[in-house]
Length: 486
Ligand SMILES: Cc1cc2nc3c(=O)[nH]c(=O)nc-3n(C[C@H](O)[C@H](O)[C@H](O)COP(=O)(O)O)c2cc1C
Image 1 (tube, rainbow, N blue to C red):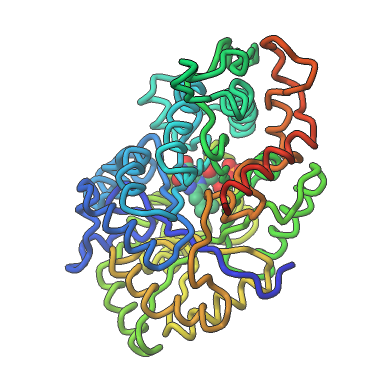
Image 2 (cartoon, rainbow, N blue to C red):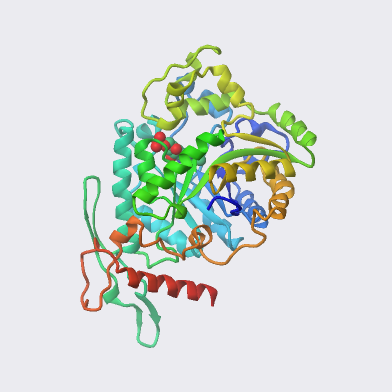
């Protein structure tokens, strides 16, 4: 059902100064230079929760943007995602000052140990009471490989093969080691955890090996909400197999709709409910009391933006030094190992540096919507209804002013049209987003890695590659929902 659904909304940010809209850190009212202060983030979390945002989505890169002019000079001067700090360090503090806001945290699995990563995120799922999500990325920067001490970026498709195994091993840790009711906390009997209900997992794979019990007890969601943004054939296949939230790019409704239809068809073909995948489009909004005031604000912001810094970011996204081309020269397609879907644009269309600079008038490449609250709300609703997407990843411009503006001018207009919640539901991030309880559905591939509990079982089992009986799983889901609404 695409008509009249409520719009989902994530603030899109990064633990850095410049994220998407580069150059705006120089605006006198911008506060993003304070990104290394905890209060900057706790204030933001409170603001977003006051605006009933579903989540704060924090992007991350391992590595630096050194492709443009083959150095990091502009990257450092304009603070183009450098410095950038670890996003997961922000979560506990923000969770402490909020009750409902979700946290979508980007982690590049290529440089993580699955065990350590799974442990960190399961711990965060506990501390946030089930509000953590993971944006699964595989990286696209050669500079990261040098920093980590590897030989060079792995082939694009091979990265996804590694991702597949990484994720499966995480499923074993999160859902295959501890049974749901393993933790008793029974002081009288002196049994904290029932030893019969904790099982070692086994994994002998192409990229990873592991054997033993997971160290973290079952967290509210067990597996964090899974986000992904694969757009290449391999990436899309991965995303529709695993992800619950998919980010897509695009500014033309027809193209967005095509991607949405493709994602839902692929999900269905893989045995998943296509509506269990929430699709988000990245946007930038400049809004004010009237259309004219919003245009004035845009002009004011543009005076501080840096299209060239946007170009430097773009260079690293596609793995091509765009400084080498004259302004009106069509940039030729060349195969790289970076973000295939962005790079393919050079194959599909004739694009010059001038075109890119115009697109980056606010320092970033996301579609820009400018206008009063009414204008913006109507455009967002139209985009949702025409394309079948579920919501938006809203970039920041002048921080935190742009979030305050959006909450002040746009949210009430969406609410008046019945297209945005007026209060949060209770429950985990998964429950709020997907509306099917706290855990992943039985059709999801995680189910192959859940520990099977059966009536005849008396001893610990090493076999975690078995499917939890459907009725058993539904029973657990129901118990969870009952607990939630009790
Ligand atoms: C909204 C959005 C956010 C993304 N955030 C990140 C990020 O934080 N870190 C990262 O390394 N890649 C990020 N990416 C890139 C994706 O992980 C992925 O590489 C890209 O969408 C291209 O997909 P492909 O590799 O299948 O071509 C993002 C992509 C989109 C559309």
